[in-house]
Amino acid sequence: MFCVRGGERMKIIAFCLDSSNYSALTHEILVVEELVKMGNEVTIVGVKLPFGYNTKIPPNIKCYIMDLHTKITEEQIDLLLSEKYDVAFSSSFPGAGYINYIAKEQNIKSVCQVLDVPIFRLRFKQWYDEWIYTVNTLKNTDIIISNIKITSYLLNQLSNNELNDKIKNIYYGIDIDKIDGITIEKKEDYIVWVSRITWYKGLEILLYALACMENPPRLKVIGVGDGTEQDMGGVPFRLVQLASHLNLKVEFLGGLTDDEKFKVIKKAKLGVMPDISQSIATMFVLESIYCGTPCITTDLPVCRDRYEDTALYVKDIYNTRAWANAIQQCLDNIDQLTENTQIHKKWIMEQRSFKSQAKELMKIFEECVGDTNGN
Image (tube, rainbow, N blue to C red):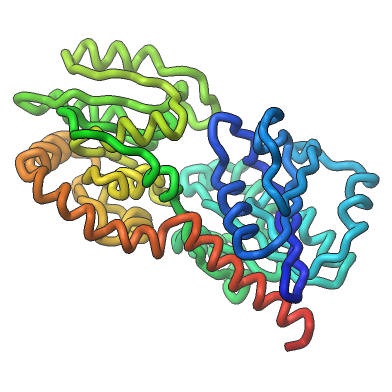
């Protein structure tokens, strides 16, 4: 959650529910740092210290540790309310209740970001009821930031269009500074897949597609998970067995730091992501292209919205032969496709980086402060 005070300098208090990854700064914290570079002050409220315990907290950033996954105490709420804010922003919908309360207490605007509404969950009553509860909470929020257009559509469906006038779209961005800091000497002869390992990321589709090829390339897999949506786990042994059974050359690298991940991506000839989710699209495709590695992905509206014309698309998304053909065609024209990635880097920097995201957030915050002050 972010709160902003008007004037020359905005004071921002950030409830970051996903801010405790010590191997690298999370996306939320990268955006916070960018807001600080714009001249703002930020107080982060997280489950764990987002910069690690042995790292000096950057200037103009203050951190509180609270148990955000259950319920913070009245004393902690009073502590947060001891300072005056002008706008309250939650980085994900579980913080909506907090920002709505602070906004009401201080007569300010509240803004909540919703990253996605997973379509496949809505078929189950438990998930549907949970999302209806979420939508009812969002009805008390002044502005809702949608991460992608399909999220706006689904929120409107769930609310019978009651949220329509509140929703604004701001695209999530990638860490271009980290990528620019990684150098490699030359490409190597392999392709790469990067994601948390879940059923809808299509890793099995990729393995069977490679088995259809006469001379399948080596594959490097970055990610962990047990194949389900809920459990991170390790690398599923069944996928290791499948790769061996199909006689494929696959390296399961598990979870890597961002530096390690981007080195692997930059050295790869091609990225492949057969993502079959219709409501969320991985940032790996944009990371791959910005790294100078062409990337093939699924031709779904959510992917077209996220990547536009930077990616290469497969229309017959469940057809392993279609994926095999696409991979081979790309490898046959890899020099030209690699050169084309340089054309797309500027667009990604301007439209799909965490810097562009922070700039768009600032515009929303400034509008909220203006509305609150009657400007």
